[in-house]
Image (cartoon, helix red, strand yellow):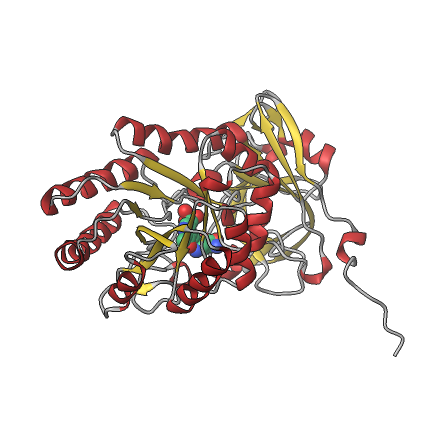
Length: 434
Ligand SMILES: Cc1ncc(COP(=O)(O)O)c(C=O)c1O
Ligand SMILES: N[C@@H](CCCC[NH3+])C(=O)O
């Protein structure tokens, strides 16, 4: 019944990391994000250990946009990962978590002077340069600081993947990166090679998110190496680093059939190794940037069921105490989720309901057509695979407060992000007397 990596305990309740979710709901309230830290660690280790097994120098950079908080970044640090940040806020959080700055990579298609300064002042390991304006800013700042930085350039290979249009990034018509085919990437190379303040290390490319086919990644390496072969001949350029981004798909519903994480690493490595042999260059370091595949399936959200509306012959709406404010993905990408009544996890399904949120929007739906046992007010609904892009994309729409986040590991639960209070909601508001 629970086709996700969680157990049902002897009380018939859903259990995460050895802790009863009903106890968690009572202790911390709902909505509540719950993470199985052991699963997060397993996901990290799948990537790291596979790179070791195939004997490739690598960095696995957790894409912190998927879920950033001090506690999760401490876990990533413990696991020896690197980190992808895309803003001052994400960088600040990483520094607060004590994350080693030399393993932090700064991204962004419109980095501000302040972001670049913060990165330089904190000696981040790498800046992934996205456009010509950024090159100008970076040159100016590095001269001012009289220092050097490692740089990759982000390129768009012109590849389409089978995913939602909003989470495609490697196509030609993208706001990200230098186009590989129209000469932009080559012009960037000419500007950066042999630069006095920029140590130009190689290429970065991220083709999109929630991708299941490894052939999209191998096709990307074909395209990159087509260009690298030419750059070797023309400019003598040999990349030290190749960053192939993240985007490895996870299971949200039974229709998703993700590959084991090691498969992506193995196939990417084979493709890169073959190409390096063909064009006779040393194997570069391979960097990847998984976000969703590290935290997505390790997280779930608990809600309390409230009102219900039955429209005979049409639909049964069941409303919960959260919604698009804690999970925007169904409204934004028509994303599908599965869930169970956590307090009735071993009962037979006997009805089909649609789970509505509390916001004043008809589109505020979390799940359409979920088979469940008989639903009663007060039941606890667990929605699976909400660990990525749930909390990080949460909002205060309708002035709902953002939920708390709890980590569970080896039967012990820890609050790692507090629930927002009403005072938090109004903390920036100033009075106006007219
Ligand atoms: C540059 C970059 N790297 C990594 C990621 C992480 O993607 P995912 O969470 O799908 O692994 C993203 C998001 O799509 C991204 O834009
Ligand atoms: N936020 C998106 C993915 C975009 C990732 C960043 N490029 C999601 O929820 O699927």
